[in-house]
Image 1 (spheres, rainbow, N blue to C red):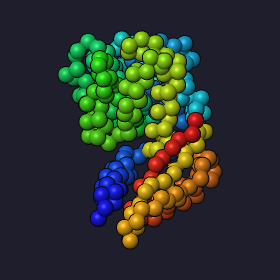
Image 2 (image 1 turned 45 degrees about the vertical axis):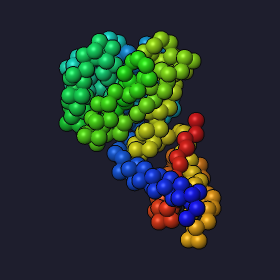
Image 3 (image 1 turned 135 degrees about the vertical axis):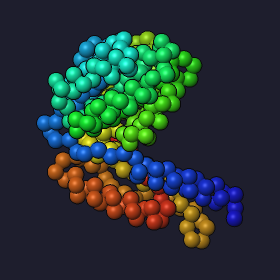
Length: 268
C-alpha cells in the first residue's frame, strides 16, 4: 500500500478512537429556561483583573440567557471553599454548579489536598441533586499546562471538564491582566469555553449555534483517497433542537460505519 494511504489509514484509526472517547464523555440533563447556575470558585470566578460585569459568570449569563450566580472569593484555598460550599448551595439552590477552584493552592504550593477537596465539593453538590462541571486550572509557570488532578478528578467523578481553556488564555498577553488572571477579553474566552462544554454535554439550550461538520479524508474500497463532507447544518437550540439532534445522531452513526470522523465547530 502506498505510504500516503498508510498515513491516512492511521489518522482515521486515531480519529475514530477519539470519536469513541468523545461519545463516552459525561453528559448532563437539559437546563430549563428558569434554571439557576452557581459559579463557585476563587478570584478566577470573581473576575479579578476585569470590571465586575466582565467576570466569566456574567458573560456566561449573557450567552445562555440563564441566571448565573457568581460565588467567587479571591484568595480562597480549596479547603476553605470545601467548607463554604454547603452554605452557598443552601442559599442559592442551583440546578448546576461550575467549579473552578485550586488556583491559590497552586500559587502557594499547597497542592496535596486539592484533588480530595474537589471530589468532596462535587459530592456535596451531587448529594443535593446539583450536577457539576469542572474547570481545569493551570500550574502557573513555564508552559502553563493544566494541573493533572483536574482530569483525574473529572474522570473519576464522571463530570464534564473544561480543559485547557485557562491555560490557553493565560498564555496570551492580550487576554490576561497579570500572570494569573485574565482580563475582560480573557474572561469572555473562558465563558465561551464553559458554554461550549455545556452545549456539548447536552445541558444548555444555547443562543449560540452548534455546527457539526464532517470533513475528512477517507480511504475507499479501492484504496483511493477521497474527501467527503456530510452532516448537519447550523443548529438553533430551540423547539427544533430535538429533531435536529436526532438527525445529527443518525449522521454520526452512519459516518462511524464508514469510518468518517467529525469535527465540531461552535459559532460565536
